[in-house]
Image (tube, rainbow, N blue to C red; front, side, top):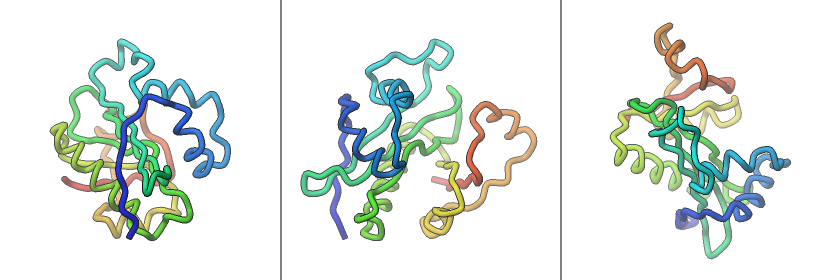
Length: 159
């Protein structure tokens, strides 16, 4: 298993190679979001009080993954996984599980009771293997999160 170190950085240029490796085309229009996640740009006043953080995972000095968390509402029991992934050469080595454990700890420290993610079909099995279940939202939850819903599937895990 590859041992990782999770680091916080305000240097957006360190994120570009990993995000390009994961998404294929990390475009400059994504930069403002990451500048906010990294704490360089201030958040909108309407978003004040939300939790937005992103970290890099490194192994032997090489950036191998990225993980991020955000809280959709100021007062919320759910912490959401933002950008999350490991480079293809590091998948199946435990890097994702280590980043998930790190994010779960951060969510607990923040007082959250659940961690959730939007995802496509491809990573569903990985999420299930790591304790997540499908989140079938009721109408009240859909209304509460209506501005934040996206992705093909929503998975959730109690902390």
